Length: 347
Image 1 (spheres, rainbow, N blue to C red):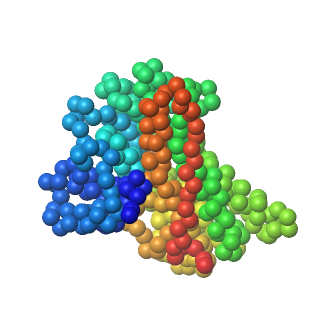
Image 2 (cartoon, rainbow, N blue to C red):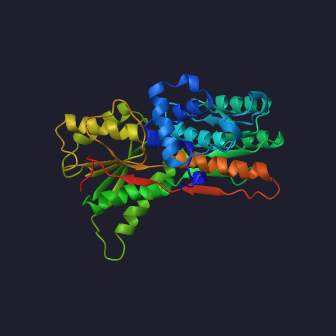
Image 3 (spheres, one colour):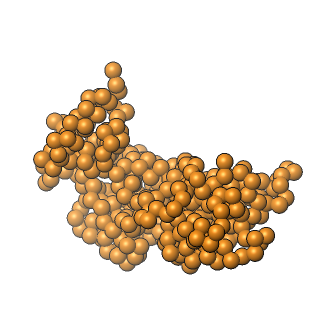
């Protein structure tokens, strides 16, 4: 007999081969779902033994439904849409709703949205920020609204709140260790926006892997450098790839860790265009798993952030805070990433 408590909306979606949003519509707005998809989803629910936690399988009327606000750094980045799915899954399992707002990587826009949610008197706020934002945290706390940071730690001198993030140091370290393990000795960390906490942590992880590889009689040839890509998009990776391909063969890196997926796609496209063999001449690995179009001409090895789990964990902490604010302990939770091997690195 399946244990329905361990089955979530994302499990149903995966089993049925549909999106979480489609399952959500099936449960709450069935008129929006085609007959074919209804059959697949109902079969998945039966197979897994899923039982919605809110009574009757329906979310309560909107005027009585607790609402969580999620301010995302940039909705174009699939990391945040995946986090949103994890948040949505837990919310719907507890008779709640989540609204997502796009800050477009603009700090002032982010602050305006936090204050908009405060004015709406939402039940809680999830805030994904690329910079320290103690004033946004303080505003929510002053309004008596629980706030949890996502993908960023809380400044030491700010009001205490929970934060949930991918273990970016481990992501950088895992990426570099994979290159070293497969024979790369001249590593380069390709990145931009070095004031971002996630970029700094991933660079630290790469440096840590190189340092550990050279200890205790390790390979003294292993080294690492940093290349500023000038941006974080596919075109920035492409321009960096052209510059790397033009380096003398004995000086250019034989292993590249890109801070994000778009840079990895761009650098691969440029290197292949210039006749550089991947992974024979240069291996490429990204410190994240994101959906990028165009995907490029070669599948990219990556270290995935398990973003849906970040969303689930953030909402679990939010529920704990809502249940008993006085007993709640503010913590920083790190979600371990996962290595996904593809054709851009050696075996």
